[in-house]
Length: 113
Image 1 (cartoon, rainbow, N blue to C red):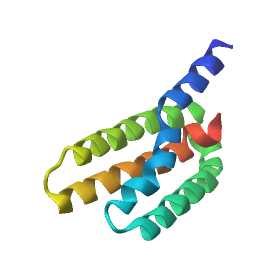
Image 2 (image 1 turned 90 degrees about the vertical axis):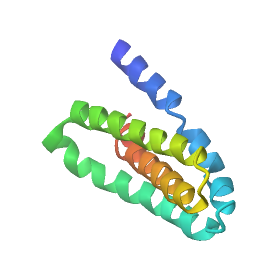
Image 3 (image 1 turned 120 degrees about the vertical axis):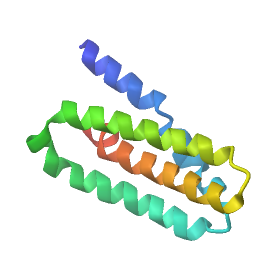
Image 4 (image 1 turned 180 degrees about the vertical axis):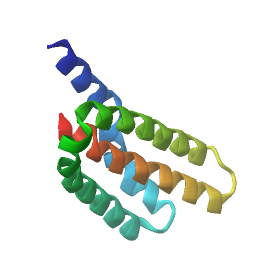
């Protein structure tokens, strides 16, 4: 029972709702709103569709742990992107962080809980 409570808590504490809510606003500031919003939606669907194929091979625990590490890297890239002064670098790092976090979340926590 405690494992389920911890996993559900981690899922909510990752911030996926905030990312999904404000991603279009962030993308709009970069003048790439339509393309990036479509990429975000496509990544979420593709990763969520592929994950069930790998659950039996790797196991839920491995997928959760790898997802946690990659989601953390995505958050770190997003933080770096928000604090970058160069627009070109900021856009690339921020988009990479947001898209990698969203894809990894939907490949691990989003589909398996």
